Image 1: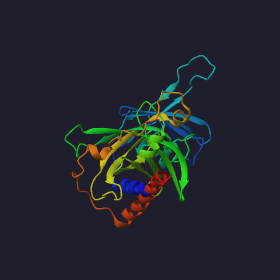
Image 2 (image 1 turned 180 degrees about the vertical axis):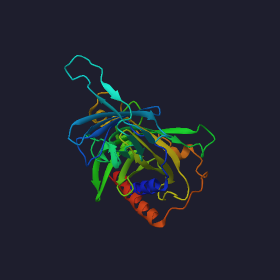
Image 3 (image 1 turned 120 degrees about the vertical axis):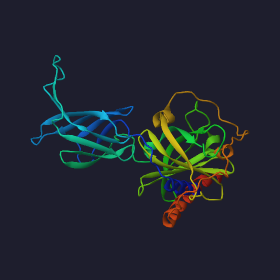
Image 4 (image 1 turned 45 degrees about the vertical axis):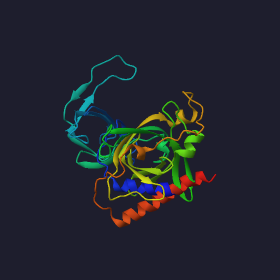
Length: 326
């Protein structure tokens, strides 16, 4: 509970701005049966629209153009017809450029945005057809890159490997729990990792953010404040002493994470493994790698928001501490 609350405080404080829209199938959940295949390579976006005309006949629209920045697309819809049927010999389709009118896509996060064409604006999101809710979809292994250049004169980046293993309910809170993996050759939570580097995370639906707290080492917690996609996340991390709370009047450091193993592989895979650590060698946490006194002043957080985050983080810490009592 205590870790969870700390993590939520961290997440609310950070200003998540850098993100990469995800390629894949997108849709408007209120209009099942239509959708948009969006592929982004470098900053070039190609989209194919599975929609219908006023008589219910299927239409095939495509659009292609470079993104404006990393999140805005503005082009025209090309209409294609008289193509090859599934079991027919090839015949070149006829494509008429721009006849479908203008189209704009404004990505808000990795997996949400708006689309406008035909004079109508619609909300769209990446189609999650299998991974489950916002906590269940996190299950698996994630590799994280941290930018600590403002905190150290040494190498500006360090990394983390997080395993989100299972969802559970702890004292009324719906959480996803797991650990920091002992190394990248073992995609699971050993007893050592669950004892010394466990994690708990909570999804805040009010702000669409994931707050996670990791037992960084014997003296420090590490709280993550994240905007999550299907296979990536972006946000901030905060290091703070056990028994204290994150300082939301100081910036944390930026983090980006990428899914590196699926939940199925983590749970049942036959990949590389190793014996569990005996716990005799304590590993240093992130706090020992950065200069704790070096902070950047940030805009003070609204007290009501800070109080809400503190409460969540403390609940998360409580979940982590409950493991130590077993």
